[in-house]
Image 1 (tube, rainbow, N blue to C red):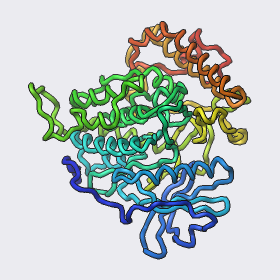
Image 2: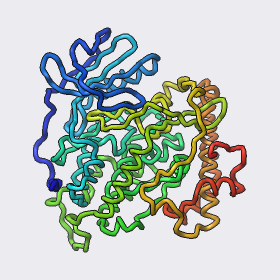
Image 3: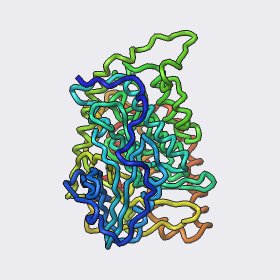
Amino acid sequence: MIHVDETDPVGEIEPPFSYRDVTIKRNTDVNEFFEMLSEIGRGKFGTVYLCREKSTGLELAAKLVSVNRRDERRNVEREVEVMRRLRHPRLIQLYDAYEWGKYMCVVLELITGGELFERVIDEDFVLTERACTVFMRQICEGIEFVHRQNILHLDMKPENILCLTKSGNRIKIIDFGLARFYDPEKKLQVLFGTPEFVAPEVVNFDQIGYGTDMWSIGVICYVLLSGLSPFMGETDIETMANVTVAKYDFDDEAFNEISDDAKDFIQKLLVKDKESRPSATECLHHRWLVKRTQVKRDKPRPQPSPKQELDVAKDNLRLFVERWSEHPNSPYVFDNQAHEIIYLLNGNYERSSMGGCSPSPRSSLSSSPDIIFDEDDLEPPPLRDPTPLTQRYNPVERRASDSSCFLHKKQDVLVRKNLAEEIKKLSDHLFMLSTMSTDLVNNNSFKEFDKNFTETKNASKDEKKLQNGFKTESRTSITNTVTNGDATKAERKVFT
């Protein structure tokens, strides 16, 4: 039986190659140096192959990306520049990079242990809270190093955490395709991410920071311990509305087996104000994550045994992984002409464990990682023409478990109206963003937009007082809320 080693890893398993100061080899075909053996993953931003270096026989993962446009080329160049700075045992390592014609290839360390969540739901794996602390500690160690390099990951989610081997307890964080260099002195805003794991400031198009990654880590921890997604709605639009409210609970039976320290760890991360969230370094000093020999309780409190197997969480996790497997990549973009959210279909999508790289975020807010604003780049780049691929978004069941799909409690009218208002404001916000490429012609117009949106949020402060009664398990169908509520007008067809 595979039982995760609940002790901290001793020593580090280094990659099968020493650190390499990689520069992109221009006008050089990767096939001259590597033999492509088989395809191991395919996504929106590229195809990943198992490859073998001809000169050494070393097996690696090669992500091949078509770069027909300048922004696509710039994205790969940025990813390479980011990864050159990330030499750490908790992070996937860069081996080489090539550019020739309309293609670029990033060669990466091959990781064979599979995705963390797929691993822990295996029948031969015993999932305990203490095992979760070992995983979460390593995640925080990796992000701590990333943030020390003034880099934001911006796509932290379960599929981007891989096990180094099939039997050990070491993990690696992968996929830096959406990562950004971060200067705290400059205002940085982005419009991409995965709705279930994205922070409120991303949905609200507010300034982001190190706390943006920490929110995602909090959601990952919640899911790992319970198998439930704290903000999941019936549709991605409702999920984003739930994120902006930032309300969740520990009422599910899965949390009956979870310690107060673990819940406190999550509560400190899942707060709406990003400045109030602990840093990765502070998380590593939290009572739940410090090594057991360091914890000294003045008055020991009765806690669920960390060695107790989390049966309910494991069952929920199986449903969570199954749901993610059934719903492939579905990026959203803004259609400036129709002023509505477009759902892009990728009919050739094939999901499999990347073994070293996950080239695209599933169900992301943007189809392009270039939907980004900072003080040096006030006008967003042009979006792809989505017309040939557009289709109305049909709500699909995306909950973590059947028990959370339905309304179990009678919802108060004010609570329902509050959620409808949050969705309405989110719709208005997304509409405003869809016109920014033409409205933001100079710095003054950008500041005016930021000022107007801030005033809009402040004007609704009294309405937000109603949110205290909101419970995540008491969410109603967005269809009923929108069509029956007076707050939302018929012309907001984004929800149909």
